[in-house]
Length: 105
Ligand code: FES
Image (cartoon, rainbow, N blue to C red):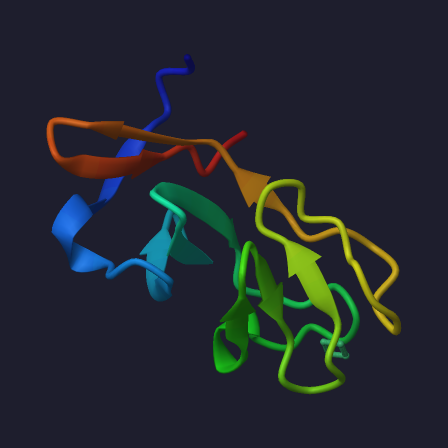
């Protein structure tokens, strides 16, 4: 694992099936808790630079509220048009009851 992991939340901060928005190293990041796992993705739709945090979770995907593209929280890949580029995904680990992400990866 890289040495760049930073704490972004306590495990209890995010209910199952929800996400929060965090700021890490000057980046807006969505931290989602889905099916017992945490995912961190950039809070920016690749289609038109629109905050994905205005949207909602759809299982292990996040849906943009502007034009409806959904992105995999696992890979960042778009699953619907009009977006055709992935969003950035950050490594996540859980340690000592806290959630860590690597914003440099
Ligand atoms: S801005 Fe997100 S799908 Fe268009």
